[in-house]
Image (cartoon, rainbow over all chains, first blue to last red):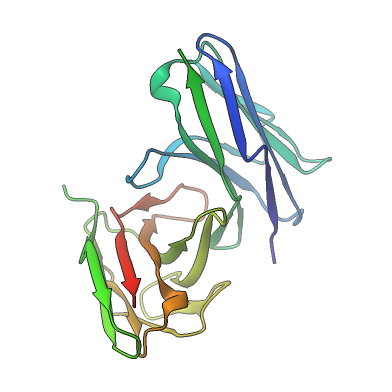
Length: 110
Length: 112
């Protein structure tokens, strides 16, 4: 089955700086890669996703890149704000199900 | 439009007790999932139902059973709860394989 590794597990950045979270996956058949944001005590919320036929996707301050050859994908958050503090999960889809990474706790320092 | 609704939100069980977690979605989604979330371990798949009438095991199915009652509802049953099943349980649904999940608000279960 699919295996997703996510790094780093914790990340602290100064407000206004950029944050990058990286994930690798094992199954070359995986074709869909979403990112979720989870605030304390809340449900995970989809923030951006990318499909295997696309190399990069942007949505305002967030972007995701995908390298299928190397089997890794990354989340980039620019101009970070206090409300970006949360746990972020990457995931990879194989057939009908998602396999999640173990999460990155992002803290924005005012 | 409620999305994905889970009940109960909190539950405390004694070891050996049984209970059923309920999940319902009103988005006409085909696929439904049960995940558990433990600190430092992300979200791990327990069972899923790719379509009405089918269920399959995920990564951590031992100690659980599921029922896809109809297209809207997917329940998770613990027959004999154990302390190792203390966790936050999330139900999720999706339309097709290339769309993200919509999650329910979660059930925080403690087994003592």
